[in-house]
Image (cartoon, rainbow, N blue to C red):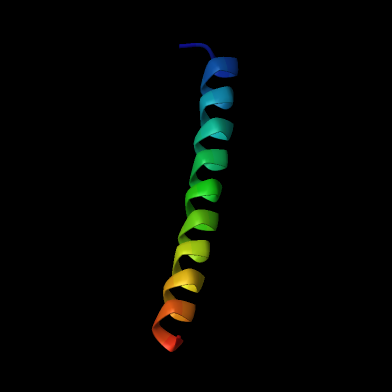
Length: 37
């Protein structure tokens, strides 16, 4: 594997991880509001 390809994959993983964390925050907010009613 060349360095450029590794760099692209690394950035892609960071973006996916950030999106996952963002979705996790939204889900927690929705659950919190649902519990409080």
